[in-house]
Length: 426
Length: 81
Image (cartoon, rainbow over all chains, first blue to last red; front, side):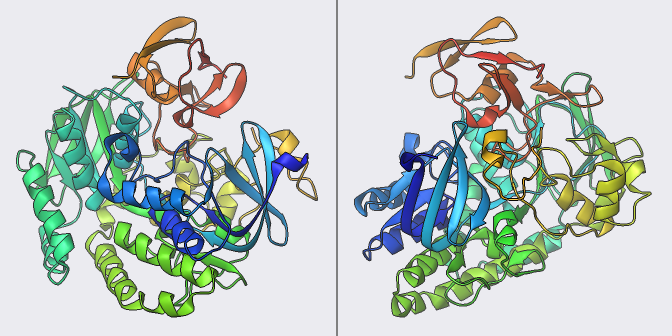
């Protein structure tokens, strides 16, 4: 490895979404020498993806501060291993980079939870956030018919976005009940910013029917999705569509934290009031500590950045704000809890693990995640269980065990850097 | 307005706007991104580099997550990797 492929930072931030940007800015504005690494081509994470092009004020202001504070930005770089103390290995353009740090802030965000139902593997059945990301990356959507389904506030935001860009949305199917949704909406009282957002969203969605107690039961098509059957108010209905945008709220990306030995609880990374994890000098902020949305990410990112740069007093001033975002996270979790009926969606032939084409009937014969891996190769493909893990957790109550390097498939040359020789994945 | 560029998907020229990812070019052109181990057609799912369903052979390099790669003029994309 030549010296150009080694970089050293006082504070290194992994993840360039709102939490990571806020963390990097807060640390760098107080004099720390900071680097921020992200596997996407641009910073902004999922929520601010493509916003630079549209000059969304909030993200633009943060990214401007990032530049002014002199943060080193390392995009398109994927962290896959920790070979030794205070050091990470990352890959960019097929080359391995070594990133050393004094303090590390994990801001690895969340991904959508996907649940299996017949036909969900057809092309053009995508995540709700997935389809939005594709449209932000150039997918023409004007005049396309998109059924939006699943659960969580993301569905509404995505539907509004797609509608604004010319898509026809015949329906949004939300699995939560009206009662749960109303309780969630009522919980917004006391946070005026959220009410303003909700009212704006309501205006944006005024032409789109929203069905509660509704969910997809099957997608149909041969080479791609052509229609979807949904349960709506207890009745089955088949709707033709060009895309099905379907996600069931979010699950945190905790693989790197677990690899580093950070303690987790109920699937989330445990942190103290400084966002410090159980591992010395490793902090965690945003969705991996609890799905709290952008406000939670921004406040936790700031606390982590301030704490990591020795500004504990300033960090403390943000604690009451953090309490609010944590309460919001708890309300979201209650409102969008998955209903038991969704466990009945897959039939015997439904693929659960998309990498290895492991079908539901085969997994029913297994008693644990480990047994499923051993006997069916479930979770052993390139996504390493990131998609089927949360699905099998819901279906069978399985919890994935330890994480092993590389946490993403890496090139053979990169794997040579792992002592003990992890096996390359294909 | 971004300019148009041409890439090749399985030997067929496809025009896209600059700034488009390869996964989007494949989806818009109507091709599946890949065949699964049992031969099913698959396309992009997560759009953010997690699921690997959009992986393709790009300029001869296999298993590339096409949702994280921007189209470049003359790029060669194959879905049979």
